[in-house]
Length: 213
Image 1 (spheres, helix red, strand yellow):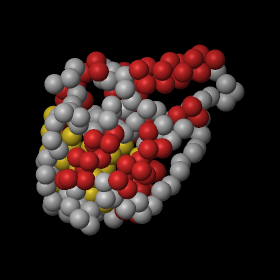
Image 2: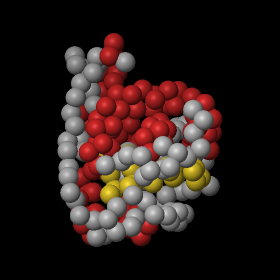
Image 3: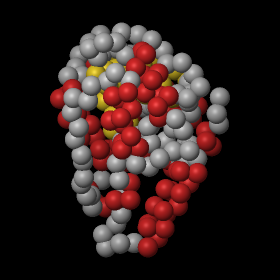
């Protein structure tokens, strides 16, 4: 099993806090997306690359006790955080699998939806993941992807030189690790090659102030 250090930004407590803030920033967009897709009570959702489980917990509360969230994650530290969140909220409808998306098979089930956020951009072989996903997603199910299309737009106004240097370092390290920050650009082709029909795309651009969160 790969070590937690294999993650570009790590899996330490500071990264857990950063991901929590990031989830809160994007949460209204995500909830709207899930509602439009039809995720509701009783549905089974495959969470591909669940991280610390912020989305998985939201999904579990939406699908309720008659539904299920199957969360896939390779980081033991992230899994511990997800397990703790489940205990705190008394959620028994999240099934966690500790797997590597690149080397392990995806678990099969009668999934209604797949949710894949900020995963395609980080893995070494997006085409492999899409092929695996195509094998386990039933006909008529929906797969939802949330990926970066132009990562360099992450910036401060007025511009902050320290943040600009940090962003460029992140991008360089990202690519050195085998990922691609602008991973969304490849998705339409990969999906079409594996039998998926792209039903909807939506770009999201917004700004936040420090006191917003």
